Image 1 (cartoon, helix red, strand yellow):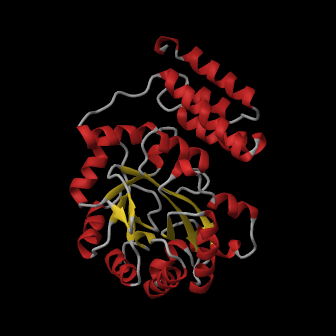
Image 2: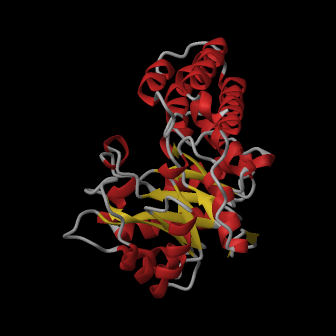
Length: 324
């Protein structure tokens, strides 16, 4: 599929997940076949102050392409200025977040709050499209709540104002991440617009990826929480979509090797102090399905130095001797 002139393999994209899908995770997922990624959401207002943290969120490495940087905000002029500033990081695409349910985003009029004001969302899309010369896309939800499901109308307004592609998460803002995602609304959006549509919500395996493609007719599927501690999901989706092959799960040795490389990258990009602090949640996700997982997750929650990581890996092997 194509977004503007950007070609993307029709397998699976990595969802933009604040505080999770950072550069280290994106590079690991790309290694395993993620076809496209969107960076962590960055505040358009924060960019007006040249915030150092915002610059980190907008970083695009050559290993990650094709990649979009994601902006949020509620003022067309500020969003347009932020998009211009973001171009200094050479993104392939600018993505506008109109679906984040977090109170600190939606509570200030950005993210999913824009679903309550489709006209303003359209003005933002138009202003950003006029400000940059790369494709502009939008990510939004089914609606604000079950009494205001307006994804189809919202999608059409975004398309009319210049959006080159649309990503829809099949849940309302009120629903947050509670089961289950509505794939019918993704299908309805796909049928209502002519630009590519990316489906997001409840893709947890190669088979569910194929099922979303079949059910919705979407142009690309997006994987979010199922990638936590599981970058192999992209390799599995790629193999299934390309050859109809269901790959076996990774070995314990491969899991630990990839986990360690992931954490080392986090430390390289953020420093050991911050990297190890943030690695606690990532390593706990890698423990899923292992013997002694509860104890191992408790140990993961105390990581402070890379040497602690090696001790954790030793403990994993100790609990799972029969897997070696």
